[in-house]
Length: 97
Image 1 (tube, rainbow, N blue to C red):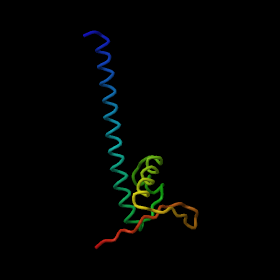
Image 2: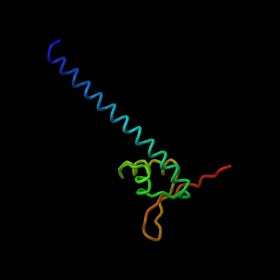
Image 3: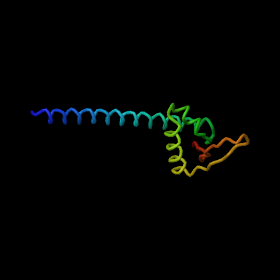
Image 4: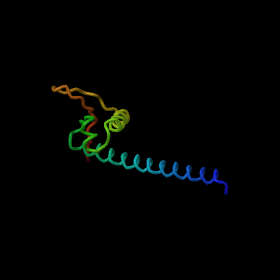
């Protein structure tokens, strides 16, 4: 095999390895966000702040913000501000039968 072909194969292998690593990280982060989100919903009566979710899921604020905004749209949550000026999303209450 010519050196150029070997170099191309090596570069492609490195790229695929990095891509798989990123996909694994994204899946793990999504799972952390899902778990933290539903735990916070239950323990905080449907009120969740960005910092609560980021801290509970142990993810960057931007990832938590994107996740929270997606969930807020999906569940028709409203944005509220408490007496201290802190912003929370208010999600519909979970009703257990």
